[in-house]
Length: 260
Image (cartoon, rainbow, N blue to C red; front, top):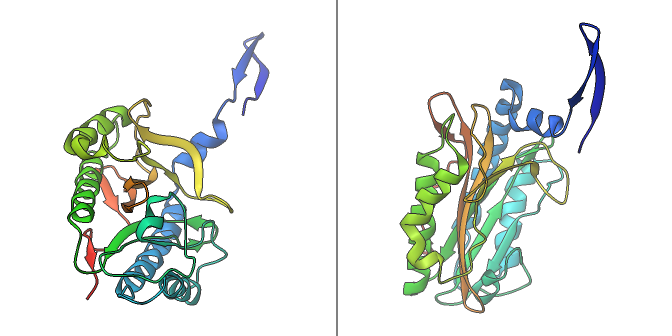
């Protein structure tokens, strides 16, 4: 988007660029917007906890998705920008694949993503569950995702530069993230949105972007790893940048959920 306007300043005309003005306004949330997103995050978290608890050997991905949908809709979510994603086993290695009547078997990873929508403001959470016996690769992939996610959140504060945060996160899991499929984007701005996306402006935390974080920004901080044709793992949080640092709005245990 680019919009230029000529105006007179002390009798002289000058051109003022309005490039990315709307995106800049969207990136910094007002107190009212933040409160709505807190409500959304609570519902997102409730749906995730319920979905993870429903993962059991022999149930289908449709069942897990239905549990998430029920909590979201009954809890007050509007028509969502992205429907809950539930994907099992080898299908979890395909980005954004979702439920397809697949039964959960022994040792299957189950990737879940939920996102409630309140007044058109979405929040997001990603987690991974697994049935026993837990494959070593799923445990290792999950540990790597969580380690990098923790580093990003710990370094989010006003004045921090996205590229520097990304390099710090890269360092803690490069041994595994460079061997598997990883999209390289640690976070993107989250807020007002309509289907088919909840991303609200082009603010991202990535090793090649010099975004400077400001108080009031809200991000979907996300890490994932996929071994194509085998399995996938993902963990994420919705995070608010505050004057003191960062505040995680979604509240779900940040761990690999092992089905009972």
